[in-house]
Amino acid sequence: MFAAIILKWFAFNQRDLPWRHTHDPYAIWLSEIILQQTRIQQGENYWLRFMSRWPSVKDLAAATEDEVLREWQGLGYYSRARNLLAAARQIVKRGCFPHTVEELKQLKGVGDYTAAAIASMAFDIPAAVVDGNVYRVLSRHFGIETPINTTEGKKLFSQLAQSLLPTDQPSTYNQAIMDFGALQCTPSSPQCPCCPLQESCEAFRTGRVSVLPVKERKMSVRERRLTYLYLRCDGWTALRRRPSGDIWQGLWEPVNCEHMTADGLLHPLFERATLICRNVRHVLTHRILLADFYLLETDNRPRLPEEYRWVEEADIENYALPRLIEKLFISLQVE
Image (cartoon, helix red, strand yellow):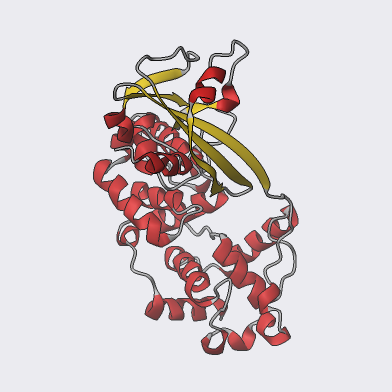
């Protein structure tokens, strides 16, 4: 009964999304990776651009990391872009797109949810998806208070979702319950008065709609300060690629005072520089960044640590930058 109501609702309320007009696993996989931590309104344009530039997994696999990161710029969570490229190369090396849940989970960046989504939507395999929308719908409808971000909760909701899945319509049902959570059973101000599941919804009956689903608080938001220096020397500037093990791996940034070396190369540069802006705020998932930004215009290229590269200012647009760095550069009106 639950699945039948969801499917009936979907027939009249489904979102028209371009990747729903194909069974191409590459197109579906690409959409799922892009939409992790990204709203559909924003992600759709990125999907269209990626599909236009790299219409097949073979095309994407041949791209460089810089090209992919540059196209990804503005979406955040850049590990998704690096994983996307790594997985594309895995698929090409394999010779074909994996078509079972377990094989799909071997791809870099593909977990339980993404594997189930691709398997059901591209290959019609009866694998239930469980994302934030599904957690919310199931938690509210069945009155489940087990925290969704615990091992117990993930197992419970996964089993429940699979038990409700119509095996003859896995793709349609998975898309239906996700749309239901996104449009009807929303996080705030859900459409309870006109909900087709109102009569059987435990949260509605007991007045717990606003408190379900339950999520354990595990990580506090920390603050981190950054100080950057933009060197301008006869139309050139210095950038470096951020290393692994920290935020923005593989993206580019100007001179960073966090990396002032013991040899003192950077200290006199900051002492001569002009402050452009202070406390520019940028929010990540578990971190708030506050950045100060300085400018130093010089006729001679100063000696820098070896990881920095001199690039023409006109070519900066070809380098993948974190959103915060873009904001700082805008303050200089760098073209």
